[in-house]
Image (cartoon, rainbow, N blue to C red):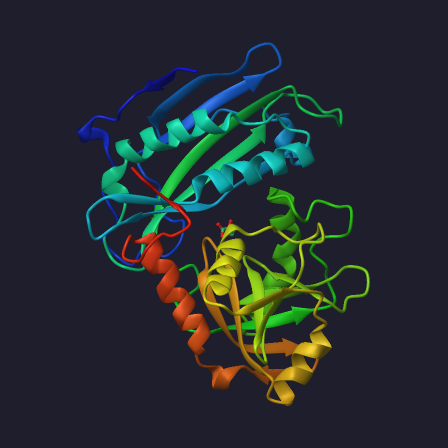
Length: 354
Ligand code: COI
């Protein structure tokens, strides 16, 4: 597939943000787009100016939510090169989401080529400061106009990027988490393992209630018994209990995080015991009370490694590690960032240089 390259002239480029980056506020100058229909497959691939799309009001994504996305990051290494973290894992996961949502498979090699071209076009958008990066958002939406419920016959795939700092207002400081058993995120047999827009839409009400109560994020429990921990709003979750690091298993209702998998690998490389098993919220509180639980941290592309300082569940509160960042969370944070910025050995070949 040929990818057209339409570079935005210098005079039409946007000013770079000069204040704190925050997350997802400033979009770069270019985007990658390509279209799909049954007759042509993927076609009209181009790098072009970041701009509005024109969508029919009956476009199926607007009614039935066939929308999937990914999140990955490019880092500016000390060597000045661009380091892209595990992009092939993200595109492979996107194809799993596409399959679940009855959307077409993306050609992973072609899309990777498009991403490389995009990053070359917007290389000056990749921030230099440690802790910041270029967040990359591949997305696919159903664009056919029609009101019947069935798979769309037309899709748009695009990649947009934006320079980002920390996802949470706390930065790398521990976040406070609200455990909900009033709402659920995903049910067995549902779409919890797919990175589809509706999962996030369904999470917003609980997140708003948690924020009103003074918490940064929601920790979801399983939908059947409302007892076992699943994941946090924008990250997977790990508990350090005794000499084990415990994380819930991927049972189909949890997002198979790429940072989650990377962290499990790093912990194993360090000779630590990582256990994927169901963990009840009651066990978490009991282990905190009897001193067995030393740390909780979340993992995600946007969130990175995010220590958890406090949990609230019904009328109970617990503080983790005195509300401070634990040793293991700090070590993981430093190690993962070290790999991502090209300052530590990338023994698993996770980083692609552009
Ligand atoms: C990510 O971590 O990349 C996510 O997609 C989570 C969130 C920003 C939606």
